[in-house]
Amino acid sequence: MTEDHSPYFLPVNAPMFRVLVFPGGTEIGLEINSALRWSKEVQLFSAGLAVSNHASYVFAQHTEIPSIHQPGWIDALNELIVRQGINYVFPAYDDIIVALAENADRVRATIVTSPLETCLITRSKSQTYHALRDLVAVPRLYEPPVSIDRFPVFVKADKGQGSQNAHLIHDNEQLAMALRRDPTALVMEYLPGEEYTVDCFSDRDKGLLFCAGRERTRTRNGISMSSYVVSMPEFRDFAMAINRKLKFHGAWFFQLKKDISGRLKLLEIGPRIAGTMALHRVIGVNFALLSLYEQKRIPIRIMTNSFRVDIDRALVNRYHHNVFYRTVYVDLDDTLIFKGAVNTKLVAFLYQCINEGKKLVLLTRHTMDVEQTLLRYRLSGIFDELVRVPSRLTDKAQYIREKDSILIDDSFSERYTCHTELGLPTFDCSMLEMLMDDRV
Image (tube, rainbow, N blue to C red; front, side, top):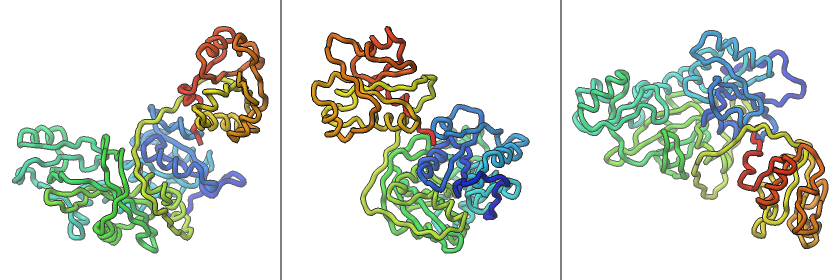
C-alpha cells in the first residue's frame, strides 16, 4: 500500500497531496478536514454515499459514489480519482478501511492506512484480544456464554463501532435476548472504571514516535465529547507492546478501561484518525498530515506545546441556501462594534466576502468620526464605501442603491423597512452563521 498510484493526468502545479476523504461526512472525515484544510501542500476532496451527511457543508468538492457493498464501487472510485487528479485516499470509516486495504492494488491512488493484516485484526475485537492477550491485559471473554460466573456483563458487536449494539446485561434473561438479536456478539466482563484513549503515531521504519492519552469524560453514541490530556506510564507500555505485534503506518489509537480492581484493560484498536485526536492536534500533532508524510516517506519530526488544554465537542450548524448577493450593507454600532469590542464573527464573514469579490458598504448613523472609529478598532480598509445616514427620521432603505444586496443590522425596524420596501434579505448577528461558508 505504499506504492504511489498517482493518476496519469495530475494537474499542472497541483499540491503534493490531492487527498480524497472517503467518506467525508463522518466524524473521522470531518477531523481529517479540520487537520488538512489549512495545509498548502494539500487539496481536499470528499466522496460518500448519496445520503444526508455533513460533507457537502465543509468540502468544496464532494461526489456521491456507490457503497462498498455494491458492485462497481471500485470502478466508480477510480473514475473519480482519475477525473480529480487524486493521488491519496484517506479512509474515514472502519469498514471502508478494510475494503480499501483489501483492494489497494486495484485502487489508482495510495491508501493512507496501515497494512492489511493490521486492518483485519483490529476490525475484530475478538481477533484483537486473541492476538494481544499474551502481551497486554484484555477483557475476559465468556466463550461460551454459559460460563458466566458474575453479572453484570457487557455484550457488544465484534465488528461494531462507537456504542452500536452495546448493552450492559444484568441477568441470563437479558443475555438470552441480546444474543437472539445478534448471535455473533461478544460477551465480556464489565469494566466499570475510567476510560481512556491513547493517540499514537508510528513510522514503519522508526516505530512508535508519539503516544499520549486522554480521558474520555463524556461520550455520546461511543464518541468522546469531552476529554483532557492525561499521562500514565501504562499508556506507553501498552503502545509499545501493541506496536511490536502489529505494524502501523501513521496515525492509530487504542482505548483502555479500568476493571473492577482498577486495572487497565484493552478495549479496541483503530488504525486510523479518531475524531477527538483534535485535542492533540491543537497542541502540535497533526496526525492526518503526518500520516501523509509517512506514506510519502518524508522525514518526520513531532513537536508539542506544553500548555494544558481540554476539549468539549458539540453540534455545529452549517447551512446551504439560495441567497444571491453582490453587495453587503453593514451597520456599525451594536453590529460590527458590539459592547465596545469588534464582532469577530462578522469580521470573518466580511473577509469571506472580500475573498469572493463582493462589495462592502458601511451604512451607519454613527455620530462620531467614522474613519477614526474604524481606525481605533483596526477596521480601516475593509469597506469599499462609507455611507452616513444623517437623521433618525430617515430610513436606511433610502441609501441602498445596489441590487442583489443584503443588509446586516441589529435594528429590527431597519431590517423590516429594507425587507418590505426593497425586498432585501436582511440579517441580525444571530442569523449570520447561515452566511458563513466553511467549505475548503
